[in-house]
Image (cartoon, rainbow over all chains, first blue to last red; front, side, top):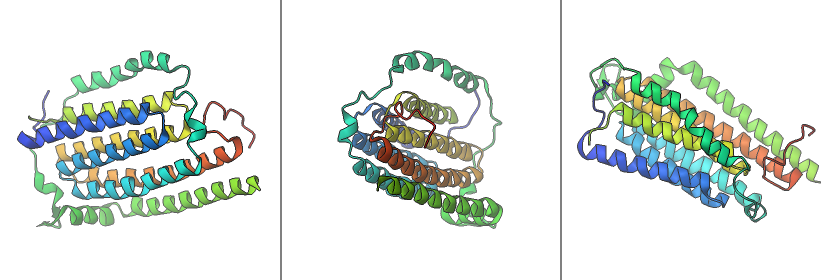
Amino acid sequence: MTGGALLTGTAGWLFVGFAVLALLSAIAVVVAKNPVHSALYLLVSFLLVACIFILQQAEFVGAVQILVYAGGIMVLFLFVVMLVNPRTVRTLPAFQHQWDLALVLFPIFLIPFAYILWTDKLPDIPSNPDAFRMARGHLVGNTEAVAWSLFRDYLLPFEVASVFLLVAMIGAVVLGKRSLEKMD
Amino acid sequence: MTVTINHYLIVSLLLFAIGFFGVLVRRNFLTILMSIELMLNAVNLNLIAFSRRLSDLTGQVFSIFVITIAAGEAAIGLALTISLFRQRKTLNVEEADTMRG
């Protein structure tokens, strides 16, 4: 197994701590009975993954993760949870009836991933931490480097993403409005 | 503690697996949506790790696109949740089994 060290020393232990906590809160998201608890554990998981991003010199992506996920998506989730009144849902059993079968069959799904993980070899490229801070040959911040890449090399996908967000917004409004009309 | 790309891949795989398991077994539509968000987050972790490993900024840019898609997907999914709840008075996906709107 080739591969240079991405993190060493204290940063490595920080990664281990963040990763273990993120995985534990992810498990709590899946097993918690109350959707409000699930949403709050999901928030913890997002924040810890943002910390892992920042450890990997992806400061801008970490900030976007906190702003969009922890700020926007989380508020949407909690708003909907309160709108639909979780008391009507909480009394049901949380899992579907085939959950034990899923737990038995699930490791089979993991086998191909484990196989790839143990056999695949990456090219041994020397680590270059400055690659995330370079723009036009100058050493600038990570945010500026991402911005140069986003607005110059990936301008068309960026515009497509904005159209996608517009479509999603219109779709959400139409869906919500139609269900309101049916209600009356 | 020396962390290589394999540690990142293992964490990302486990996070994706937990999310996938949640999608498979949960009854509550809201929790299924949250599990999908967990899976997208695991993909982002992979993109960032490979971006660092290959010293290429492209992975970071693409993880921003993935976050955008996740935001749109959450908005549509939650609108569907409200629609389902208004019609059926339930969030149980096992009860939403007819095709007629």
